[in-house]
Length: 320
Image 1: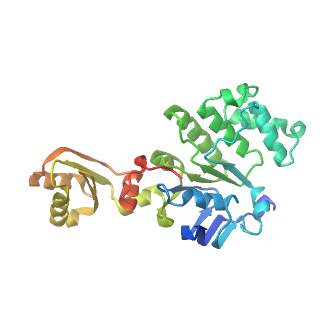
Image 2: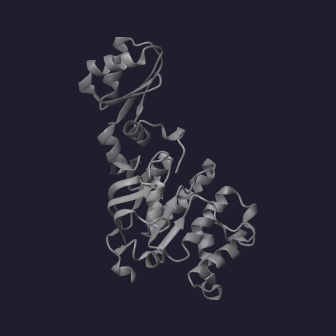
Image 3: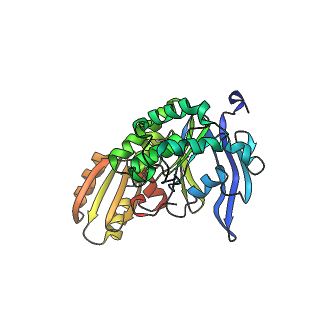
C-alpha cells in the first residue's frame, strides 16, 4: 500500500470486544487514532489497555466488534498490517547473546532486508538513538536505558507508519527516561503516528496529543491532557490531610460550598477538593477550622483526573 493512500484515521475501533474465558476484558470500546498524533492509553491493572494494544498489533485476535488499521480489517489482513507497524513491547525481546548491530541485522532480515543494502539505514537509526559507538557491544552488557533505545531503533527498521510503544520507559531511571522522551519527540516530528501506553502521568503529558483513560475494560474519557484537566478537576486542587472523621468533614465541606467545587475525592485521610477558585476555597475551608495536619493548594494535573475518574492512585497499581 503506497504511503499516500493511508487514511487520516490510522486506527478505528468500533464496539471492540476481547473476551478471556467468557469475560470481556475489553468491553465494546470505541476510539480512533489520527494520523501523525501521539495517542496515549492510561489505565490501572486490569483496565484492558495492553490487551487493546495487542489486538492492534495482531498478537491477540479480537472477539467481537470491528478494528480497522490503515483501512484494513485487523482480523483478515493482519499480515499486511504488520508490514507497516513498529512495535516496542513491555518485555525485552532483544537477543542478549548478540551485539547491537547483530540484533538490528537479524530483525532487518525478518522484513526481507539485506544488510549489504540497508547497512547505512541501520547505522542512521543507531546514530539517531545515540548507539552508533556501541554497535559491537553485546546486548547483555547494556543498561536498561540503552536496551530500550535499541528496541525503539529496531522498531523503526521498516519505516513504520504506526509505532506502538507499550510502557516504553518502565524501569528506567529519570535520566534515561528523559533521554528516551527526547528521541520520541524527534520521532513525532517525522509525522510517524505513535500509540503509547504508560503509567507515568508526566510521560503522557509530555508526549501525548490525546489520551484515553480506561478502567475495567471501559473507556472513562478521552481528550487532550489540557481538556481532560479542565473538564474534570479545574485548575486547582486543595489537599487536606485530616486528623479525624474524614468522611464527615468531606460531607460538611462539599455541602457548604458546592458552588466552589468541581468535585472531591477522599483517599484515606486525605481529602482532594477540585476547584476553579483555589484561593477562595482555601479561605473558606480555613474559616471552618477542620483538624488538619497539612493542607496544600496546588495546580491540578493528569494524576488528579485519573484519581477522580478511577478512584485509584496510578503510582500504587500494577501495570498491564
